[in-house]
Image 1: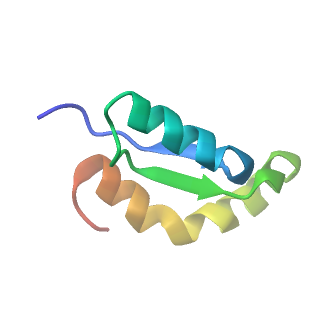
Image 2: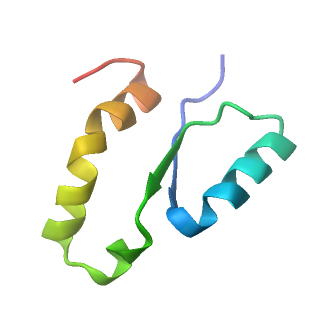
Length: 66
């Protein structure tokens, strides 16, 4: 079956991530694309941006919802 995974990538690298995934035979690799500006924010701001994606993260890694 394999190991569940999720790749988190910033928006400028989305195309590259999809291209690499396809080239490695993983066209359906789950990707979570986040804004690039998160690198300059504090932890609370980063959590606020990722919170709406928690269901996707949990489902991608464990196959279940929250």
